[in-house]
Length: 498
Image 1 (tube, one colour):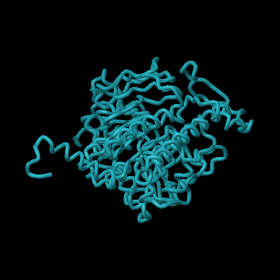
Image 2 (cartoon, rainbow, N blue to C red):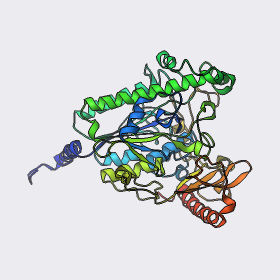
Image 3 (tube, rainbow, N blue to C red):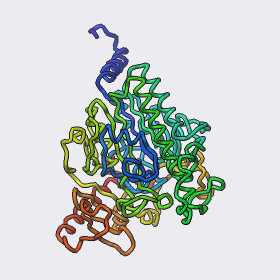
Image 4 (cartoon, rainbow, N blue to C red):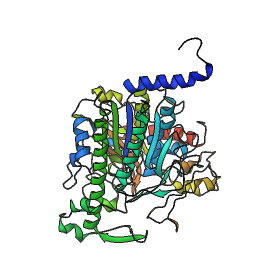
C-alpha cells in the first residue's frame, strides 16, 4: 500500500490483509454441541454399548476434559453461556424457550470483527431463526445460518439465513455437517479464516434413526424391555410410553449417526489440508434425560444442578497446538468457550461481567486448578412470571417458524420469551443453585427436602455423602460467595450491563 491508494479501497485491502494472515496463522474454529448428550454416552468413558469411534479418536489425539460441564442443566441457557461466556440468568435466558437479549455480545460478533467468516448450523434455541428476529443467528453475529428454532430429527426443516423453512432430506447430523462443509468450501476460496458453530439436534427425543444405525444396537439386552419410559410420540407429537430397550436402541443410533457426521467433518478437513490448524471442540448441552438414562453414574439427570445434570463430554482437537493423549481433570464449562477463543485469536473480552475463563493453559498442561468457581443456577421462573412484566422483545418477533415433531401449547412451533426485570426482589434469589470449587461443591435447594448440601467432589464425584455438617465455616464462606455472585447476576438481569 502507498500514499496514493484511493481511500475507498482501504477497507477492502484491510480485509484482504486479514485473510492472508488468517490463512497462515489464525486457526479456523469449529464448535460442535450435542443435544441432551450426557457425560457417560461415549465409548471412551466406558459405555457398554455405544459406538463413538470419532469422538473416541478426538479424545485420544486431542485434549480430553473429563470434568467438563454445561453452563446450565438445560439447553437454551447453556447455549447462551456458550455464545456469551456469561451465565444465562444475566440476560434472562432462564429455561428452554427463553430467548437471549439483543444487546448481548456473542462469540459470533467478536470473531466477525476479528476478520473471520462466521456461520451457525443446526439447533439455535435462544430465539427464533427468522430474519426479522433481533435474536436470530444473523443478529447475533453469524453471517450465514441454516438453523432451527429448536431440535429436529430425520429430514429436518431448517431456515437458511432466516428465510421460509424448507425440508433438508437426510440424517439430521449429516445434513448440518454437509451445510457446514459447504460453507467451509466457499470460505476457502477467499483464504479467509472461519468459525462454524454446529449444534446438532441429536440425541434429543423423540428419536428417529436410519435402519443401518438401528441395526448396530439390535442385540441390546432383552431385560431392558422390562422397564417403560415416557417420551414424545413421533406419530402424534404428544407424550407416550414405550419399552426402554426400543428407546435406547433409537437413542444410541442417533448418537452413532452424530459421531459419524463428526468423522465426515474431520476427514474433509484433512482432505482440504485444514485439519492441522483447525480447532474442533465438542461438548454436550446438559446431562442425560431420565427417559434415556442407562449408565449415568452421577447423581441427578438433565434439569438438576447435580453432576448428572451438568457434567457432559468435552474434547478439543487442534493438532498444531495440542499434542495427543492429554487428559485434564480441571473443571471447565461452556462459559469458558468465549474467553478461550478470544485468547487464542487475540481479541479483548466484552466490557461486562464474564463468568468463564481462558482455558488455553490446559493446552500445555499449565493449569492444575481452576482460578475461580463455576456457578450453576436454575432460576425459579415462577418468581419471574408471578408479577406483570413487560416483554423485552416484541412478542410477534418471538414467534418461531420451524416446526418440530414435539407439540407444545397445542402447536408444533415454539414461542420464545424474555422479560424486563428493572428491580431486584428477595424472591429472585430462589431456585436450585450450586458453587463448584476445585474440591468442594455446595448445592442449595437441589432437591426436595435437601436445602443445603456439601460434597467433596474429588473423593465423592457421585455426590453420595453430604459433608456440610463437618465443615460449617466452609459452608458459610461458600454460601456468602454464592450470594455475592447472585447479586452480580441479578444486577446484570436489570439491564445495567448495557
